[in-house]
Length: 356
Image 1 (cartoon, rainbow, N blue to C red):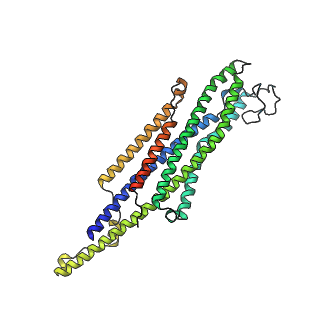
Image 2: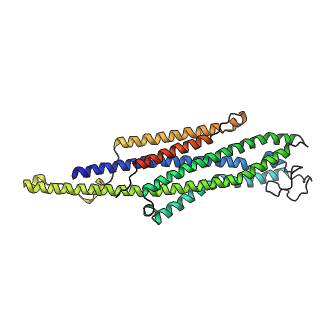
Image 3: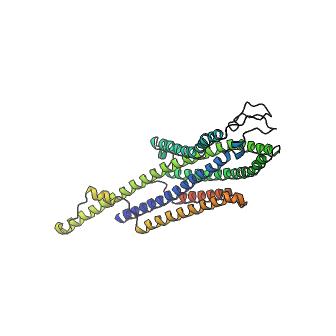
């Protein structure tokens, strides 16, 4: 029986080690997801930013109807009439100091806040109402969260593909704005205005889908956090129980040997105190397991840095100027599908079904 208990303790220790490695990989994928959310928020900020022509020469194109949008500061001007020239410093300061910070908050900080809020709400609800393991087992919760991460990366790749097209159109409008600003009476202003209107019409549904994906990511992160914590607690309780069973068996064997030999003074066992029992019941990683975890952390960090370096270089400002930009949407979709499939397969194979 002692041999059986020792084998059980080693098996539970291996399961805890795998859970730690699995959680580290999941945390790395979650960190990459947040990094990509921040990256795409910069693209939304660029698409929402007013052009140079709108900042310093705010007027309607001759063929465009009056549009009382915040980008045109003279909504009540008659069609075709040229509005009075505003004070250049006042108009520039108004857009630069009021519109840009609001757009920066909406595009950069608000998605991170939405992710954090959905994470806290989902994890609190799951933990307080004990949906895991009452409704879902810890194993099922972890696998479902990995499926949510994979779906999020697929959505992120689709959003990135549309963003790349819109950003390319936005860069093409810079040349049109420059021509329209240099030559009065040209139709470049009409073309630029129509393209800008099409881009803004696409931004609203795209941004709505993007925020839905961010909330989905937060919900999946909350489910992963609660399920991993529940499974870890289950495994630790099972490990402590196995260790206590082993200690009880050892004490029984010692007492039996003492009675059999009649040498109490010689075979007297050291009493096991509560503190030593608690210390022995704590699972500890071996040196090889710690080395594997350190190498895993280093590998995940390096791969993340390489991925983001490639994305930034492929979509940099210099790449748009030189015409050497590369689409990264296919890469994001591929990474999400491969990593999600691998995590689901490994979890289905190695995560314990029950830890009682």
